[in-house]
Image 1 (tube, helix red, strand yellow):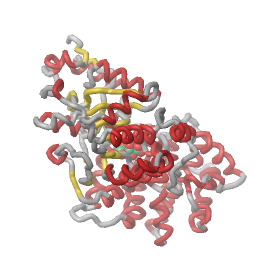
Image 2 (cartoon, protein in one colour):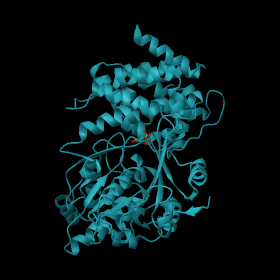
Image 3 (cartoon, helix red, strand yellow):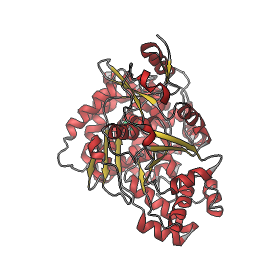
Image 4 (cartoon, helix red, strand yellow):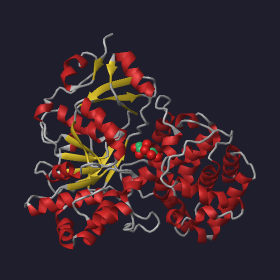
Length: 498
Ligand code: CS2
């Protein structure tokens, strides 16, 4: 089979092999400027907009991708070479695989070396939404207090040099300043990261930054920019070399960076768009007045559930989430955590059956073809656990509920950060901006059992909660005494059923 490279000129030939965009891409304009074109964005928002474009209309809702970090050069180069096109490979639990080419990304700009084109693009009249997937850790606030971190060196630089932005805050204010001066309407800032109240948070942080940089502009932003909260969901593992080979061998398609994902997809958005929006509901997006209960359910069940499997699984020596789900101790433990610790602290959502949601979640985690690595789930745990897991623990401390399942995860996280190997002595692939600090505080556990908890930015006041400290100390001592993680999990389950 002849190999066909993914690009615009080859679309007619590619379309003989897999579904391809059949709309005229040359007539699209970028109403959406998206910062953070990772796998998730390409499997989720870009896919929804592709669906909308495929239905005709919506020509002004193409996407211009933006990378603000030096590390974004690779995706920029691949997508530019491929005219923004890429393959989305959907892997079903029964082994079925659907591949298709997505066409909604029509341009890509890098801001790290030269910020000007990015500011100009965000300030362009055609731009009506700036959306973000900049990761949970990208919002620059203190996880324990929620306060904006003005001490970050890049932030300090931007405050003094508004024309040389580096972070999302510098770029948004630079672009909004230009729009305001030109008498243009503002844009909507739409966060698509896994943060509860993600719209409220980006609003609060942007205003904190803008007030310090330019109070008058801040007042305009406050009135003119809208910040919908959103709940986003689709499990998107890191692309592997095997995915590239699969496309090549099965379809004769050469794609430099395809994306794989599960079939499940969900996007719930508040209808708060300052400058118009695509008819997202036509592509299956749920538009609701208040997203908060949905966000909370997803973060506390799915994302925290992932972290429970990821951290305990990594320590045990499992490489993937589906491998954890083949182990009855892990599935029982996960369900006990979801049922006994998370469900009681969720708010009721009319029309949503939480039991059914959890069943679906288990099936999604168990999808044997996704092979989502525990290293992806554990990556940036320092940004994730304070948002996914610790709030549940805090809620349960307040209501006198069970805390044992979540506490073991924190104890295991400490042990794992200290030892950096699994329980078979195999090195762990730890990716975390705070890796060194985590390691340093974990290392002192042998002399000071709660040393890990002294990281107040992560754990807030938990160190002063007697009940929690008692439980944590018991767990961490067991692990340091050599207890096997699965044995600890079973022991906690036994205590639960008594
Ligand atoms: C995962 C998420 O990063 C994580 O820890 O839980 O990336 C998860 O796969 C997505 O939020 C699914 O929507």
